[in-house]
Length: 385
Image (cartoon, rainbow, N blue to C red; front, top):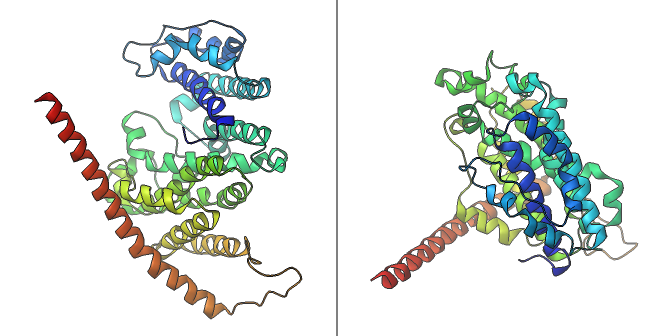
């Protein structure tokens, strides 16, 4: 509801159409001879005025979106034709991608094999969403038209989020019999992906996590460039909030043994603070800088990827500094070069300032959320009594 009215309904319908598609794909009770043709032709349903599907399991939590899909179609046909075309195109690509994976026996038996396969899987489940959102934002005049000429940027937006979630969800996916960590990476540290769940293998598992985090950080530059190219404030917020939460989550899962035991999440108070801090691009850059340094500083010399992590974090820190070197400098003026020891002191100062602020603001937000919950319970109690 915070989105600009120009895009509010388009993004809502985009989400609901993909949610319906995903509800078909996720439901293991639907037979392949029904599921696969439905996924491949799902975009064609958008040409209809009325259509619904009640073949999901009664236990499928999102089955209602398919049962009442005619309501979605009614709103879809009220959108501008250009927005309809974007939604239909992404639905066609994603539906066929999902069908391809269902018919891939090796993937179903053994999970993701190579880093290339890893990127392709993330493209279908997240990169395509970024592609569609980019077309919607540009068509609305809310972003740099050049974003459509460089889809690698939107691809990285999706992959950065998806890969972070895949690292975090190790335990949940393992318990569900799924495997999304690429074998090309984890096989360097164990004979079986499930080995990392054993305490005696935690150290190797932590090295594997650092390898996966290193792979994920390859998308950070593109993410920052993309965010700097979105003009509309509400669209920028829509894009930036998941990204700052992802970098905070990435720092939280980095060399964290709890990943092998449970689903690790950042605190709600921290989430509130990040949302407020990221309202400006400068604030978003400070958040990325803070968490990248946290990753760098928490990497022990014994880590198998110690040198690579250090190089990558240094490279990204330099990139962050280069994003806006001429801020407040008059045109034509010479920008003095800041000595390295001054830059280092600035970094230490930012760490000193931001770390307590994160802790305090997180605590404030946690207390606030608790008070809201207590107040809500009080209202319920007074009504019931």
